[in-house]
Amino acid sequence: MEEMENEPSFVESPVEPLRFKVSTMVFDALEEMYFAGRHTDVQIIVQDKSFRCHKIVLASVSEYFDAMFLSGMRECYDGVVRLQGIESSTFVDILDFVYSGKLNICTENAEDLLRASALFQIKLLHQKCEEFLIGHISIENCIGAWRLAKAHECKELAKKAWYVILENFTDVCKTEDFNFLDADEMYEIINDDDLQVTNEEIVCDSVFRWYRFDPENRMEHTSKLFEHLRLPLLSSEYLLNEVEPMELVVNNQKCRDIVREAISYQMLPSRRPDFNSPRVTFRRYANMEEVLVVIGGYNASNERVADVLAYSFARKTWFQLMSLPWKLGREFSACVFGNDIFVSGGSQKLDSLLQFRSDNNEWVRCPNMIQGRRRHAMVAVGESLFVLGGYDDNQTEESNRTLNDIGEYAITSRTWSKCGELNTPVRSTTAAVSKEKIFIFGGLLADEKETNIVQCFDTRLKTCTRVDNLPYACKLSRAVVCDKRVFIVCTDGNVLGLTEDGVCKPVARIRHFNRRRFGAIHHKGNILLMGGECGTSVFRDIFTFNPDTEKSCTIARKNVPSRANFAGLKLILHKKFLKYEIKFDSGKISNQTVHTS
Image 1 (spheres, rainbow, N blue to C red):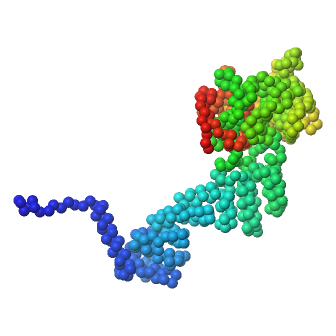
Image 2 (cartoon, rainbow, N blue to C red):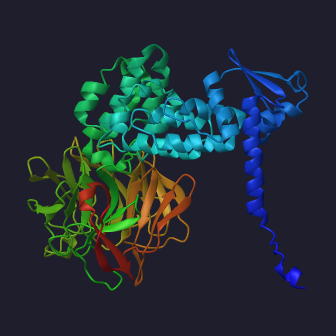
Image 3 (tube, rainbow, N blue to C red):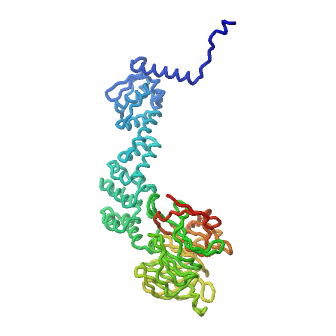
């Protein structure tokens, strides 16, 4: 018994540590046999060098060699494999990795090793090469790294290289590699909304340099790339001096049309709200941003508000802008000219005209209207504002309070003049511009009856004519211009269209729509609607409606202010004014934080 107790006790080792010891022993032995040339059964010939290797070793780390040795090809029997498209020095590095676990990688051989590891399907080596290249991406080599990564399924390398391209585009576009991009790669870069450039001139300059590097072979490709250049966002001077005179533009009708579109956008500030083009899209890191501006009106508690709110379409967030100088009350009118907003009349100050200067986020008072009013329409044409019809509470006779007066405000000279009269006095009407003519749709007459008449005021001739009848009488409708097409959204959800010959007819219907004093504007070819009231209920929603397909798409239902009798307009603002992020509780502002985007 004592002898047995003195015998040493044996504890079996865990499997994994033992497996590790055995695998290390095998690995060391294979390395020694490779360098000694023992038991090798395949000869690999690369360029002018021969390498004696073990099939089992190559097949165990490479799916390429495993498939080759199982295929029944000649190499399986004669033991000689000739490899093409690889340097012998690269194959030496691969064998060092396979037999010794040595990674001989540097900036000079990393790309060759990556390509070889992808060819031979050596996953671990492929991973290590990708990690090395990720750590050595620079402005000079990011395009090459991006193209290499796409060709060899290196997702992380492609992701990092793409980020460097976008973040440093101003410098990347001047590198040698940029000149050798193909057209599809160029399209992919310039079309990315995350491209970090301070202005679109940088993008255009880079594309034009790329074109001039090989104009003979790139002319056709460049004309197609023109569709994706955001030309309307360029300055007028750049368009006229740099783009329009280009031989490429002069000789290509499609390019000329795209340039003409951009020049029209710059030269017709009164029509910018109606403009629809994928080329008017601001990038994520641009200084400017497109927003929906909501001005004044009444909230769900029937309280007048002086708030001016901006909804960022990109960030789906509300911001607070400079408030109105006073609460406008009911039935004022507003329109956009260029990148400013003008607000006229309203129940509080019938003859007032305010201007929101977007460059400074400030409100300024303009000269008062000659004829005060509310329930009127206001539009911008050329370099002027036109106020049409409406209701003047200060008239002593009720029969004279519904107006036929048309006032014109010359924006540059800041002067008012009476420029004409409507055929029929109306109020609670809506108006839209088509080819310098103002169309006025329906409204209320002096005798309180709704009307279906359509009037047209020619801003050149200063004459007004009755051109058609709506299918039915309506008031408080909203006219919207989308791609030069005029639509009238009625309070019952019916949508009417104005044909080129001035005829109004039903074209669509918004389902479950029954509200008045709502907002309606053009947005990316669709009609954007928000707010409004039905009885005592005030709506809190924003959605778009396509009059061709009759499909609606909700933009926001939560965190939306309740508003009626307000003005909703689309504007382009500098991001520095979008600092104060706000949220809503039951349609009211509940908190405010400083936004640091």
